[in-house]
Length: 452
Image (cartoon, rainbow, N blue to C red; front, side, top):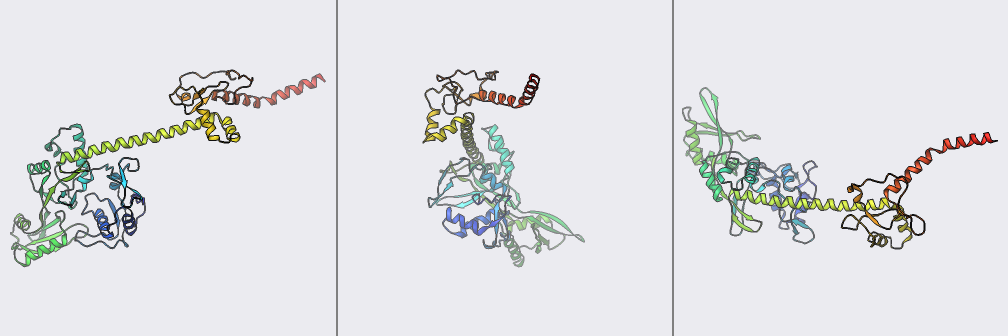
């Protein structure tokens, strides 16, 4: 999508085009896997910070599938641009794709800790990983504290990142000691409960409204599960279940009697249904992109900070090389500008003008204030060369005389290559001569009439 220039401010493009380009250049294993990954990156209930902005039917929290990729469109989000920031400035290493006709990055520059922000779940050969999503602002605050205090412990980091932050909301019921132990070892889990409120129904009645459900639970399946508990009479305190959700989740739980305590009803449903679920944690990552290892929260943040340091150093070197290349080009243009007549003569008269210009600039009589002989300017009247760069860095005062003070050559003529001072004095003399002739001709005509 970066190659297709699908930036956040551009127009959407068909997902069929995106899937086809990915399959043809980077992933030859099938279009369905590519499209499913694209759809998941666009779902705000699956990704804490979506990387793709979709237009069309990309599924919903009830578990409905997305429309076919010939009907949907997509483009990148601002968060995705941060992940690829500086990718065109040699900030990361590249490798050949599966066919060898193009390059693909080994890792992303990742201006944000996407692995911890959006989380990851997957199974590989002999290993698995399960990382919950977090709030990116809390991760950045913890990273800043870790930079200032490299020996910070998990308890210190929990002051900035107290726990996971799921896209569907919910309440983590574990205590601080259990959360700290999970982050310290990289293994464990979190108990996640649905968020609910008590709502007055009038005439002394009430209902429980569920507004947030656990991460990874389909709402339609949860409604079916509660309906089965009601039909099988496994939840004697529950009288009815209604789904009044629109864009936001709203599940209405009606008690069987008015005197039922809301906390007792919800505790029973938490135990019997997926209104409460357990999110496993297995922070198994590739350290330095090579070695699989279960890391703690602090070590994961240090790995990201080390990666960002390498990226910034490589980007700075690339920018410096671009500036040096541009300065070299400017120095060459200065040489040509200050010796324009001689350059034109060489181009017109010499058979190999390029070789003649190179040989002229690298002559043994070159005298420069720098170690390099490139970009030297030949002073008028002398057979020596002066660096164009010294004109801007030298603290010497320029000669005030309008006439060139350089010695004449052996033939009595001045050198055809003039310095900037000589050229400037010549321009001044021509301007003064062009401004004076009218008064001079007038005085001359008056004197001639008197003599007659």
